[in-house]
Length: 76
Image 1 (tube, helix red, strand yellow):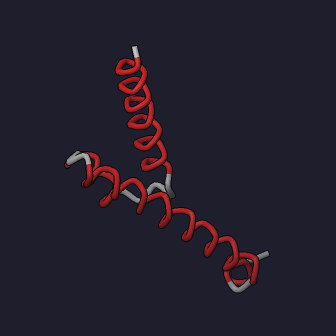
Image 2 (spheres, helix red, strand yellow; image 1 turned 30 degrees about the vertical axis):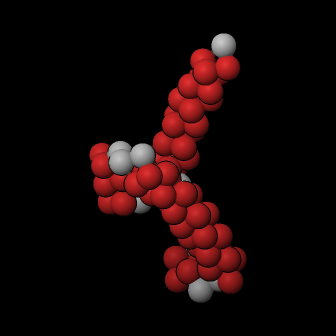
């Protein structure tokens, strides 16, 4: 299979569309959260780097854990 036949394959384009949608959704969520928390460094990193959604997922995971810890401290 040559690269030309691979790129013209419908499966290639289906996979590319799925990855693009995945990346846009996670990047949008990450940028929204970073802007709301005024995290300029994270916002710029997510805006400039294209990591297929990995960097925004890490950011959301880390900030989600911080919020849960704060909520638990307030309840005590």
